[in-house]
Amino acid sequence: MLIGFLRALDVRLTTDPGGLEELRKLWLTWTKGRRILIGLDNAHDAEQVKPLIPAEPGCGVLVTSRAPLFLNGTHDTRLGEFSEAHGVELLARLAGGARVVDDLEATKEVVRLCDYLPLAINICGGRLATREQWTMREMANRLVDTRRILDLLEVAPTVDKSVRASVQLSYDDCTGMQRRLLRLLSALTSPDVPGWVAGELLDISVLDGADQLEALMDAQLAECSGTDQTGTMRYRLHDLVRVFAAELADHDEDERRSAAIERVLYGYRRRAEEAAPEPLAAGLEQGRPAHQRRRAARGR
Image 1 (cartoon, helix red, strand yellow):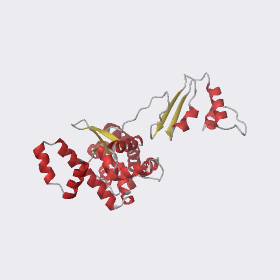
Image 2 (cartoon, one colour):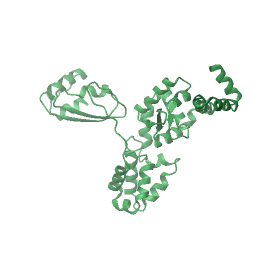
Image 3 (cartoon, rainbow, N blue to C red):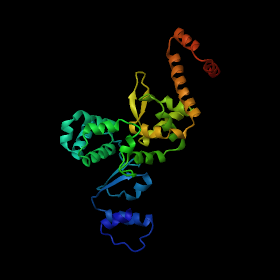
Image 4 (cartoon, rainbow, N blue to C red):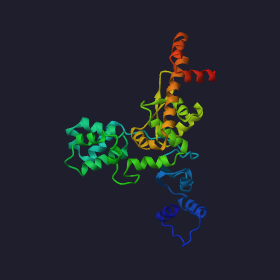
């Protein structure tokens, strides 16, 4: 990449310009005293970006990436999802304003079913643009089927033309434990969960589970949905990520998945008992299956 940048500055390179260090020195020399704004899209990690950062204070570098880069001396910010208005505007540009005016409610539904994801909205807009006979309601009705939605949101198996391929790229960068957590989270029917659920699903400590959940957030596969009345942070999977993870459910044995879900349910019950007044807690204890009462007794 440095070679391309140097050529853009009309630097004449020899047939053997040297390794990364030599190119980096040449880059610093040619950017000295200049004011340059550099845009780097979809960087994989910090090591890919560092050689391209000029030393000149008059230069700036704007980098997009799927995960935080943690580059020293930089300002990191996480971009939020599209608003409903942003999504409607994008659809209007791609599919035509008349379609949006004809059925604004269906347009909003398409944006919602796309989970406010620009890539998904862009694909829908492209499909509508090439299918004049489709109404916005037709597109919305097609997106409702979760078994087919990721197929519909793909025009080619590449990360810029397929929601499934885009999510797969982030999934592949995760560890085995993080992938398993993602798949297990998709098996829960709750729209969001408290952070301790991750530890129960993986059968590890609450803190270790929270670390794995935070890693999924760094990979843009999960997000914090706020705090509940007790001040506990809650997390959710993006809707399209949940569909993607559910497609991979056969990677986990039924027994292990069922055991993970049972641990979560027991975790809710245990916490309810701890928060309940003593007479109510005693009643809950009596209604608990015998094997769980024995487990609780051993844990005291």
